[in-house]
Image (cartoon, rainbow, N blue to C red; front, side):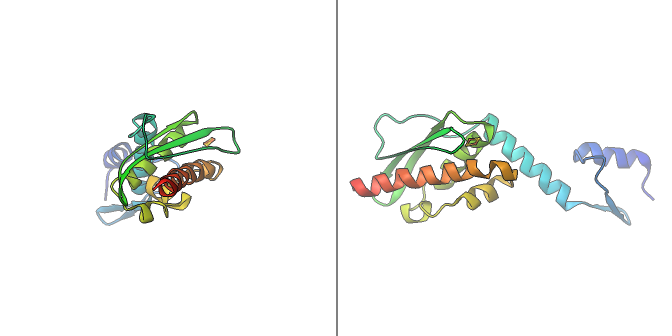
Length: 158
Ligand code: FES
């Protein structure tokens, strides 16, 4: 039987919400869902507070800018060689969720074939981040749509 000390150790180690029930089976504690949520939260916080590929390129091959229904603006800048995306940057005046979406979208697109990158959807962005609250799904859409616009701009200039 697991003691109270171990229970508290587990809750602390995995930062499990005390309200959430934990299933104890023999000597194993099964709560993969809580562990997954913890990882997803860490990923989201990392992308919000330490975003990758932020900036405004001075001479991009492709550029896209969209202002979402919430009033936030997203910009994407693309450098490409043939069909391969060599570099991609984003800039936004939006909230932390928008920043996380922009950051993860650039990482998903970098090094990819244009045909693959243009297919990146808002659902792909949400999945890559782990999850997003329903009322912030539009941030992922703004990010994916702006990347598409920058890539379309590149393709029309090619
Ligand atoms: S709140 Fe406006 S795009 Fe996120």
